[in-house]
Length: 429
Image (tube, rainbow, N blue to C red; front, top):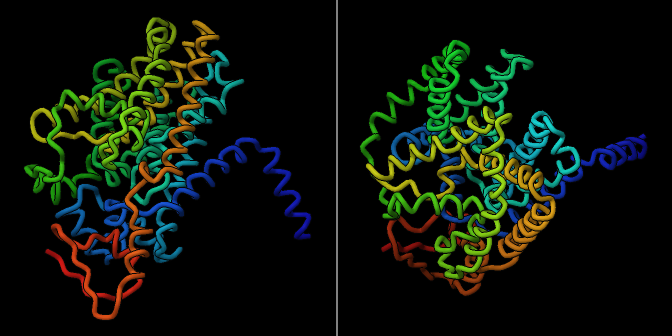
């Protein structure tokens, strides 16, 4: 009986191409998750999630740049599934695969002219092979969950304007994803603001459909606004780099295109050829954007996705101009799914203009994405901090009575102690 059940399972897997396709990428990010060290921000998330519930709320309210929901999720998942580093990272890999599955089904829904029918796996791979997506799929942070929530939320928002869809089902998905999202990642508020202004400016006849949802989202967020946001609104993050606001759009594009391999200064690796290469290849694949712009039949959807994509970016740029620079591409994770959708539609319109040009450009894009994944997965210069190997080498030399001295503020970092096996005295300076 067991053998028969296994045979049925493997036959099902064989027949279900999408499942098999996604599992390959799932194993890829699991390999990276197990192989690479956690870096400082990840270690902070893990450290916070291992605290008591009161401490998690206190940290989120007083010190952290993120709301508490994801740390609470890691806390309870750690209690059930264990507190090893890979078990914390596993969730991001799961959210990565779920995002790809949601994207696949949404593309089928949007397949008005059967553009996706023969290339559905190719277009989904533009997300799955994205260095930005793979990086955040293999770390214990909330960014991949943010990408999933934002995609589901936008899809529900889009379908509300489709009279053939179940309105109540879509408004429930939109409302619930928005409430979860704002307690996971602050900038989802900017996504909501962009959607609000889009309805006000272009779809006022739909305002009544959204008003109850927006009120419910606002009321659910009032406690956090009162307890945290109003008290911290004057803060200036001390670790943000003084980057001019007008440079930030280029940083977003480079980061969305090449992930941490392209944003080389993060790892202090000053090889700028990856940045130039992948930015140029992505730019070529966005040429179809201008053909999409001219399509009057698809103007309504074009305007919607472009408005919702650029709205949160413009809000963040205004904050960067007035207060402090919101510069890192990960702070824009809520619009990354729309970046991928715009890339896919640009690719489709390019194929309509010139199939030969499209095949060349999309081939270059797939090739350079695979190249970047190779750099990120196999080349130590482009990987995360190397605590996993450094701590082991250090502890080989430690003798009884030795001390470790950390030079810096609030040391040692949790990224060191996460791999520590010997109990030695730590000296901070």
